[in-house]
Length: 555
Ligand code: ACM
Ligand code: ZN
Figure (cartoon, rainbow, N blue to C red):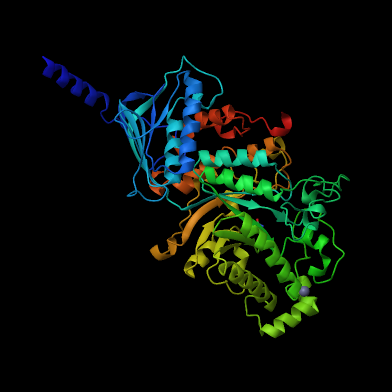
């Protein structure tokens, strides 16, 4: 009799957990291997059992998870150390790859295995998205069935560098907004935040050796109205006073990001895009100025003068403090859009060219090789301190600095060429991955944007490998990033509108194997994904949900 009960129970359990292929999960980015079974794990009130070797930030992530679960289910979930056959069990498994996780849900237990912090964070993130959407709400929802579908997930990312960029120079975003930005990046398993901290129109990070950079370099006396090319004049309103991060705030954000498994890659854009610094230290320019923090958008002719040794003292002085603040192996040194017109006429620059014995070639004038000299010298400085440089694809012009990683933005060619030369590359072509572009062809109904058209579907369609590349070359494409420049974005709500849900599409480009991407599956999940954004307090665009979007300006 007993035996029959047992047999019946086993048969029922097996049937309940039998494989079922026609369902999918509303998890974005979608895991690379999902085997769904029927049946559910009842998670309300479940105890969390933690491996004693769990990384510290994973312990706090579990605590956050359990706190939220207890709140929405109304049933307290305890956290204990050790292992168990029931409940939610987290196990450190050193045999798994960095960032890989296994999530096994049966009727009795959820077992999450990973080898390090990011794997655990991603497992918990997937689990959150397997729960009813009300998990993301701030209210208890007792009428909801708090269950997780039985399943086995084996998952790891396609690319190791999964980045999102933010320009805080053209318009500033507060520490709280940056943390919110990081939160939604973490929700989509991104692991690099490229923080564009300085530009012609404002310097936004405290450098103790050069206090003028924030005292004066953060403020522009006014801002061009409307689009750069529409000639509507200037607004007459100073912008930027106090709009910069103290070093304590930077440390706070760096450690917040680390707790989410995100490394911050700071960018100090040089030798171009430096007018804000030149306004404070005119002796670092070719003409000696005077300069003022730029009030319009575009590309300025005034750039740092590499003919003067003081310029390198300045760059290294700034970078010394950047290295103290940011543990990232990669430091982004910009390199984009650096006109050479001042260098052509500057006696110091020309003397430097002569001293170095530089010459041009059929592709590039000699001044391009002067920029290569700057990049190489800064790269050497950082290499001696154990760091690596990333530069925009202009650093390929002239001679590419040893060990430099290239961020390919003007197209894919820069990335392809870098890979061909045996350098690592990160793909961020503006054609698909500039989130300052319009999301609708009906531009009049949209808030002002820089131009272009990059709807969610186009972002989703991006494939980073290029036909004809060898296996060795594709191994140098280490990642993908989208960029969000903020010339025309002044509010948090508008920023989020430009980011979401394009970020969701980006995350599948970064995470999913090419053959696992599926636009229809993704599109079906988007309403739930957007519902989560709403519950978490984000604004988002709704074009791809078939609704007319409420633009931030119309709110
Ligand atoms: C860039 O968009 N200037 C890198
Ligand atoms: Zn010069």
